[in-house]
Image (tube, rainbow, N blue to C red; front, side, top):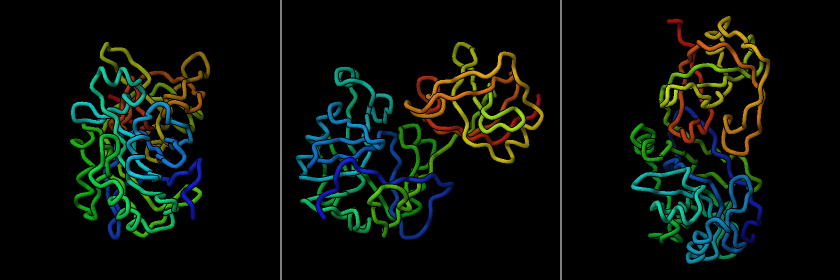
Length: 304
């Protein structure tokens, strides 16, 4: 088969509570932009299909120096020993001025030397990837990995999260790369911190909420909306029962950035009277005054 054609649909990495044991490859979950580097097509393609080539031409050049390859991997920005997700949105001049380096970390080889490798098992693709990337260069590096479950678990910690390693990814060694994208049996486990947040509003209704608009106090002592929760568990719903009261003024619209990454659709929610505090679990992706990923609500805290 010839090299994969553009646009490419990527393998999905599903969330899990724990890393699986067995015949798996484990690697760190880096806080960056997932994208494909397609040297034959001269394109950097994002997970959602956007063309990133003009923003990071040096990455394409660095990959081309390794051959006519097609990589899947993570585009990462580094500053002073840690990953800086927000810096990927900076222009080249600002990155240079602030000492930010952008590197593509390749974790899969989808095509090389005119061949489509996606139907090879992961173990074979990984072996070829390591041979192609070798020691890497200024723009492309090889993702580290291990077959040791205990070592994989070490990437899931507060210390690793503090430098931009969100957790760990596990992939079956026998897995093929899905030709149409979607599931490949890959899972990710993130590190989460326990946080408290105020309920500012609900989607659905106060009696049957589907998600919570959450707020926290900023450095000035002002309460600000910081994110939208994920779906609520039975435990969370039970602890909220009878405690939420609609505020005056009716439903409001909120920016989609509260619900996830930029580009998420705006949504409608019902403001509620302040006073209900919830326990939640959130990862370290907190930037520009909001959580970048959905927050998981554990339960409402008892009234003080």
